[in-house]
Length: 348
Image (cartoon, rainbow, N blue to C red; front, top):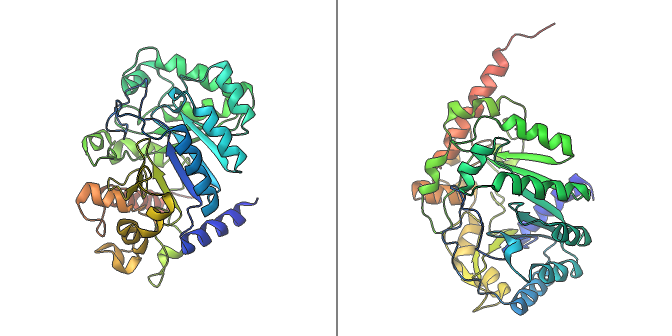
């Protein structure tokens, strides 16, 4: 399946509101206490039974879901995770499993291999002290590295993710180097999001522009103008996957347009997912947003590359149709990098 075909397929899913991409939180429980985590309550009970998980997966398959991410909390702490994942594979989903790495034993790694699934692990830093300052768990660095090594020993596809914040804005290059050395993809995200309940405490961990400039200059991010449709003021298509082709379901059954959106559209313990997806007034509202509806952003020349997010605009600035502080800051940074690139003398 080529990249061009996938992009075309995702665009068609957007237009037709097919939930082609989904994520399910198998549990809210976690053995780490990462300072930036968007889970508001690690003690919240997991209310979706194995049977409801199975029927939910069947619903998604019928509705056209192809790409499924199972996550948490720490997903491998849920005892029936493998049963659920096996059912997902039987239904034909392309499966990704998101973990902090610490619970990936030899047996778990063998199970991941048997699922033909890809794995995602957060690796905050190659500095043990910084890593454990973020996780607030002694010994977490070595546990995560061991889990990563077990994944790669089986040649399982692996994505290492770096949520960048005040603690680890420097040192990202060593994570990229480590990823290259073990044959893993590495991706960094320079923006921390609010908790799922809308609590903004995590936003205090966002690194400022000056701290992030080395990353933006590193070549590990495009940091360039988007040449897509958003640059055209006549564009009238969906602005985001959220609610159009993607949604998140929590371990309590709550359906959100995305992981960052605090508003709950419905609960699959009370309704079918199809009913929520097709009938929720909130999802309809999110789904209907077009460029012309945006206040201020509609006429902003930076809209093509600001990375504006409906959820971030809502939680950061209280208006889903307005600007997002983090997106505006990002746009200024992109512009600064572009000016530097243009003014940089050409070397013979």
